[in-house]
Amino acid sequence: MELRHLGRTGLRVSRLGLGTMTWGEDMDEIDAAEQLKTFVEAGGNLVDTADVYADGGAEYLLSRLIEQFVPRADLVLATKAGSVPDQDRRFDGSRGHLLAALDASLARLGTDYVDLWQVHAFDPDTPTEETLHALDLAVSSGRARYVGVSNFCGWQLAKAATWQRAVPGRTPLAGTQMEYSLLQRGIEREVLPAALDSGMGLLAASPLGRGVLTGKYRHGTPADSRGASPYYSAFVQPYLDERGRRIVDAVATAADGLAATPLQVALAWVRDRPGVVAPIVGARTAAQLNAALSVESLTLPEEICRALDDISAPIHFYPDHDWSAL
Figure 1 (tube, rainbow, N blue to C red):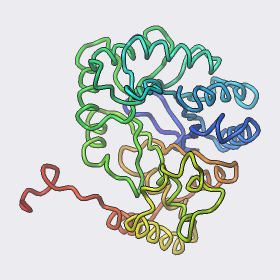
Figure 2: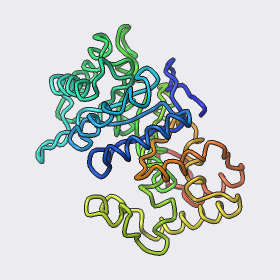
Figure 3: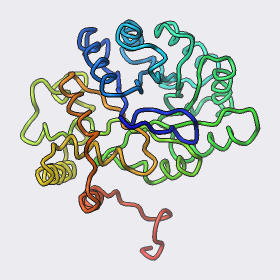
Figure 4: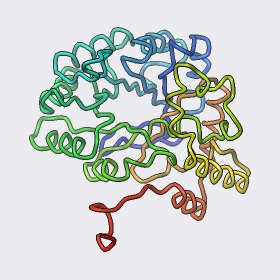
């Protein structure tokens, strides 16, 4: 699998990442082991997790599989901290919480360091400079090799990136992780331009539109799908609207013309967008993961990309584009 640099850093990651959001919850150790083995054998090295996935269970499960199937040094381990199970405060970006969460992640992962440590979301109740100081401490102490953020909007991302580059000795942000797909192109408004301008790479979460872009929901909701799950149905539902159906139909038409699958077309589109380093794929089975890995050999023709761009284009006016429409 092709490797790409994460932003303006020396860190090279596979251009497809393995997500673990359901590990330890909807996926047991046997299935997770099969996925990790399949991913590594295909040349993948980027494995993304978070301290809140299965309340830490995903990290613990991952630690049980490392060394059994792949040497730790061959993986780029990425995890996140900052989300908290508190109804009154969903995110905690305080230095104390973040560093304690990192130590807990390292213990669950059974490693001395993570390759990429990310702040899971912006915390409006903590000064940004305090949150970012935690990232500096993580790197200077050797507990993290590179750092980034996730789910920051445009101004938040630009502010954080500028702060980290303003003074020598601070650790520049290597990347940002955001949801990005043909069904969700909102980051193109401000986040993606900010990331590109600041030299950060984008890790694209939910690149298959939460599974909708595979076409599995075109004629109903399969009983074994996340759309039918009591835990994830609300996660899928927003993309099962009329706009979503039009985009999925266009992807299916493109797939027919290319002798490919809708999954391959949708994944290749986001993988090769400007600024994207790697889509993060969270598969339910090894068969689904194999289907995603097969996209490595597919590059979409320019005319197909343009057609998909047109039908999925978000509406951007003032102040992003032509003011003459005002």
